[in-house]
Image 1: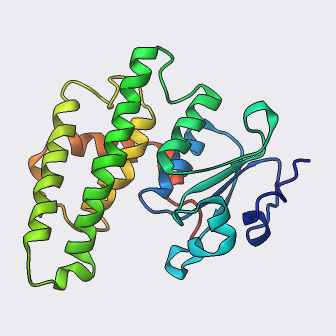
Image 2 (image 1 turned 120 degrees about the vertical axis):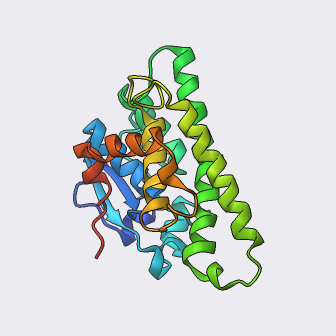
Length: 234
């Protein structure tokens, strides 16, 4: 049986099944990337709720795994060379899971890197910009009298949606007929933008055709539906 005692996080969130991959997360746009991927792949795992609303990601045990204090993070007892490995950053975890299992990432080198560039597009642009929309449109930022920040993030979010709209022309998924970690990286953020953040009208989401259709296809997948609810909120 694998020994996870070298990871302090296992003391605060004990593993009932230490032989399985351990997921420390919350169902946020970043968190669900990993739970969706795990559900799609079918890799056995154990999910632990890290309640960021209670600042649990800033506890010493969590920071020992991710010094940046953000979810998600994982510990895989069966890492490279059969040794346990801990990882943080959702994009890095997606790549790790895809390469570990040979799923959700094209085997062809050129298409593999093309997929990875779209994951980086999400990490570098979509996540940060949509997150700012959430702050300035839904949360405390909405009370700021100066609306220029909201307008800036609105315009950039609209531009990014148009990039996706163009990419999806003639494609079912970001990588043509192949559903990959690129789609998984994006679905939670697009869903949150028009759902939880309530910014659909702000970014004129209904004027798009391909992105809404792609979102519907993503949300129709059973693994996506399951992953969006993992870990279960207390």
